[in-house]
Image 1 (tube, rainbow, N blue to C red):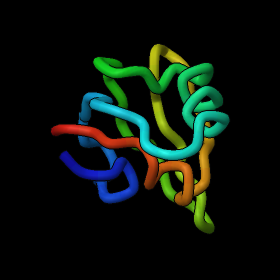
Image 2 (image 1 turned 90 degrees about the vertical axis):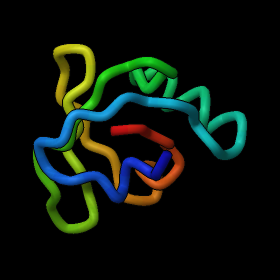
Image 3 (image 1 turned 45 degrees about the vertical axis):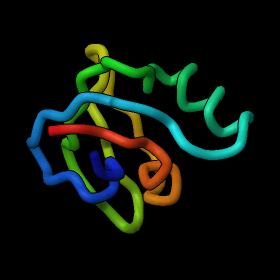
Length: 72
């Protein structure tokens, strides 16, 4: 298990858990980052990451990406 922040572009990963305060966890879950969801990083740019999840592209900053625990 590792933070999404450490993933590589194009690498398929599965969300395992979200760590952080309740409001942060709720926000990320509302975006689709729930346990079992398949994700992959499309791009990185200026401290932000573009993540593909559930047929959507979502931009999150690296701080939030560090709270999402994934498995390759």
